[in-house]
Length: 338
Image 1 (cartoon, rainbow, N blue to C red):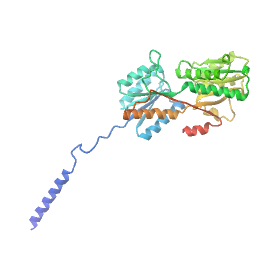
Image 2 (image 1 turned 135 degrees about the vertical axis):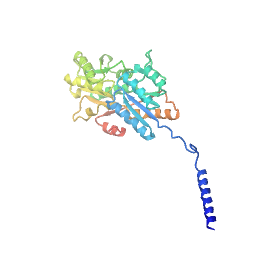
Image 3 (image 1 turned 120 degrees about the vertical axis):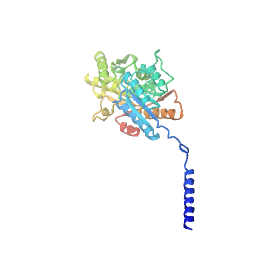
Image 4 (image 1 turned 45 degrees about the vertical axis):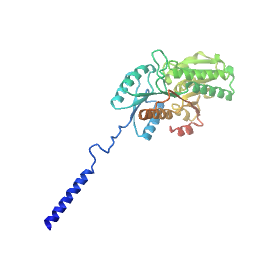
């Protein structure tokens, strides 16, 4: 009996082994290949500036939300921009958001992106072709520059009226940088709104800046103030916060007190130290544009374009809101900036 029983157990064991083997899937069967993780780039021209850091922050919130990789690269010039596109392609990225250091690089950037099969979305500044016209085939998200400039101009006029300044004693200094379309649209908007409010066009003066920083604005406004004597009160505006801050510093250097100056910036992220000063300065406030939201919206549009083939709209515009010493902390906390 023992040998028979042993034989029976052996056969049973063999059967179970074959049965177990038959249940194992064939190589590759029943398992789906893990999709490659989406990688997207976010290229900005001035990575040291708070505005672009907040745009990156907005992009990072979307990357965390959807679980993809966001590659952030500073591209201060054309050479670094084209090298960054090569780097993204080599790293398997599907596309990138960009604020270009030079809008005239548009055709070269588009050509290189197409060659690498990379999708492109513009933020802040639009590409310009060789004919001087916008490259409208590239999706763009930016501020409604004219409307934001008009908001700045209306705020200046309203504050002048609130303070009871006489028209004959007041002039406007608008710091300009007309080489950049977005900048020109903003300052043109300021001038349009001032004229619409009844402000004398003959008392609106442009101060062209050579560099888009506080020293460049200071020099431009300082030269204007030296020529325009007899003005008691100044309204000050520019394409962004730094343009207005430089001009306000120039009014201080020319003996104007804070009560005799109303400066309105644009962006709302480069004036926080100014608004925190214990004593008010001539910098009254800024038209806040949400950098985190712009970064988040462009990154999200690019993600769904890469993932689902959903092409973004060709032209998306944002608007702004006024921040002053009284409300800036509350507003910026809500934006996630403070």
